[in-house]
Length: 462
Image (cartoon, rainbow, N blue to C red; front, side, top):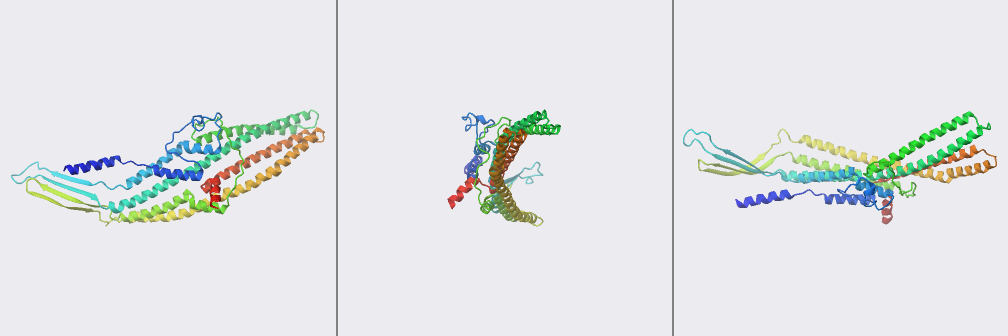
């Protein structure tokens, strides 16, 4: 008896010491994130709500950050992402639970008579049954396979969220850059338009301009003043959004940004990116894992036709009579009315659906790649035209107008109009730079990998 008690105590202690650990699972996620984004992720990282408090930033007096640093801060400090990491632990706990066998069961009945009808009519007896779930032997391994599939799906979904966070942070950073440039350009355009207004008013004194010219330039100036106020509000909102993605307290205080809006980048061939995305995008892998999950689910549901099968030992003893007995115990749920066919059919339908969704996912990913790729190629040509033709032509026009305005062959109004057109064209160029950077970030998201890292790996393979 002491021996059995000791065994029960050891089993209780072992079960109490069991913990759900996700270090190895999170380590795999870290490696994926580093290989695809160039930045790592940290589980249960200490969060900072002020940029100045961060260990990597506080030594820099102006708190200037690059685009890559903004991405790194977002991956480390974004509370939504940190909260999402806990889903990995939840899925791992479900996996551990799925691998546990049903606890042994002991049923005992003690019958003690309350009245007797004479000698030999009352007796005390005990009936005990101890049994284990035999059906666990073929159901638990299958249940564990399904839970393992779900854990992989959760890990891949978190990885997809990491890629989305990177893309959104890059776009938010570029939005701040572009809006800063637009604010400055609009301010310069406003000053030139004010000069034009003053010139028109001055020339009216001598009868060279009409009230129509004055009204048009006043409307133009007011429109630019309105645009300038909107640009400043856009800049405040851009910084607020960037800080939100970085997990910082939203505020209008700007951050010093180190990167330039336009940087030359090499874009790989579309076919190479398509092949990589279709093989490596986490969304594709999730779709494949769902197919495997439902195949495992079908096996599990078929194994549940005999859902409950228990075996054990039964014991009975009567104390008033010399009777004591042991014997086998067997309990089974016979599949007469419920053969679990509906759950098997449900899993089969889910499997067919998952196979179709894989095709849908492939088409969607190809669309996500093609659209930013084509837009980026067109924007690169537009930017080249603006840099090589449009802006130089306007610059020449300005020089011509100001040279001849000095000799009274061209009016100062014409010279100022030429300068205004230059600033308007510059605003369009800033907008094209921004959209090119945005399309590039979306192309990286569609690829599922940092394109700089992708090019480096491709060169190493070549």
